[in-house]
Amino acid sequence: MKHIDLPVGSWLDSPVHAAWLMTEGLRLLAFAKASKLPDGFGNLDASGKLAPDAAAETMNTARMTHCFALAHIQGVPGCLAYAEHGVAALRGGLQDATYEGWFAHPEGLHDSGKAAYLHAFVALAASSAKVAGTAGAAQLLADAVRVIEGRFWCEQEGALRETFSRAWQLPEAYRGANSNMHATEAFLALADATGNTLWLQRALRIAERIIHTHATANGYRVIEHFDAFWQPVPHYNLEHPADHF
Image (cartoon, rainbow, N blue to C red; front, side, top):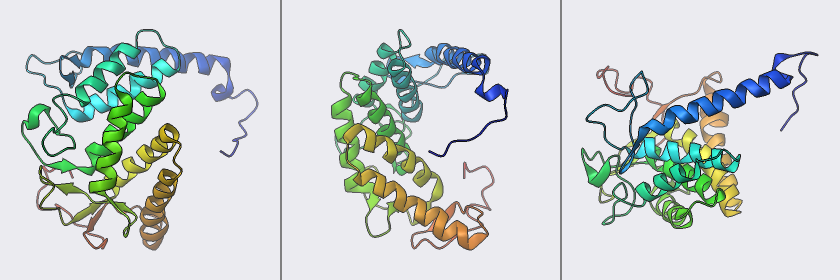
């Protein structure tokens, strides 16, 4: 990583700033603990509390598992149990025992198929949990790698396919920069957790496609939406303004 020369006396390079970062990190960890549910982690409201009808979600569970695993690696007391809870949830009702992969919600409730975006977070969580020595993380990591390599990664395209039905049928005729961006992050973590540099090569291939090919040709503005042939779709979902995309 290139060293950044900071101005003499810069707050960013001061012990006070380092202490502030640590304090803020501990505050966020304490805040996040309230999101724990019996079957994973859920959404908190603005005051940091679970709603009465709160339910576990795979995305939240994966993200919290990743955060608590990193906290444990840094030596923050009490975080390993939360990482273990997350790993157990990702190996429990959030995992599809019939067709493999992960549901967005426990046992496929409100099933919306198998999304690359979601599975990238599972891979990231599994990687961090493995490095943290979390119980069950090695098997979770093996499962995540198998699904990503067998279902989502396209060697010819050098990127992830987007979405399938639960039984891995009906692939969506869409490619997205967002899911591939998160996959780049996950692949860097997978390289650390597995020691396999192939994941670094795959991360680089995604960056080459999204940035050096498409963004470069677009005045270095990143394009988010593409069709199945990686042709830009600038007006994707324009007629559905309430869609999350």
